[in-house]
Image 1 (tube, rainbow, N blue to C red):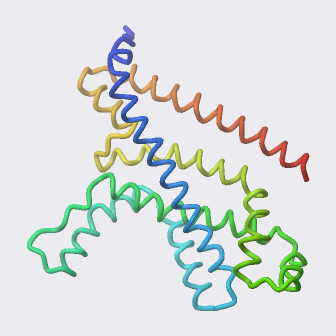
Image 2: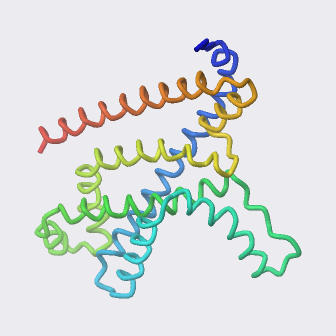
Length: 227
């Protein structure tokens, strides 16, 4: 095989642009997923049966469906639903980037929910009762006492899920969004250098994910020592 990696060097600006979109999508989805996942976790732990069952149904639904199907459904079905609601002549264009952000936040919220639920349940109930004894409401007890400790306990797992999210963002190429993998795929097909480009992409993902995973392990050991 005559490998020519000069195509990689010549395409670095375009690849970097794709990587910027991948990092932006990862950060936005992680923050949004963590926010809504925390709300879902509180809903699942709620004593209100309707609220708890609704949150459980959403989480179980999202965790039982492949992410690529969620992306497809939102990209193709939501415009048709909006057309039916608004009565427009043509389906409104949601767009690949908007679809990616919304679907990833919706999907990741279910996984962050289970992580945060485990973190909240890891806090002894005595601390909740102590907060009530001090005159704190349920919301104040969660915000000031329970959630800060749950975040600290679950931080390594949250970061691990974010690394998985970073890998999953490559699925947006199915709706023609130009992420890092999508940019590499377009260059590979244009220059007929699939092996070189995909080897480079695999190497980049390996270095980043392995490095981040090692940092998470170090953080986990540090948190274990603090405990």
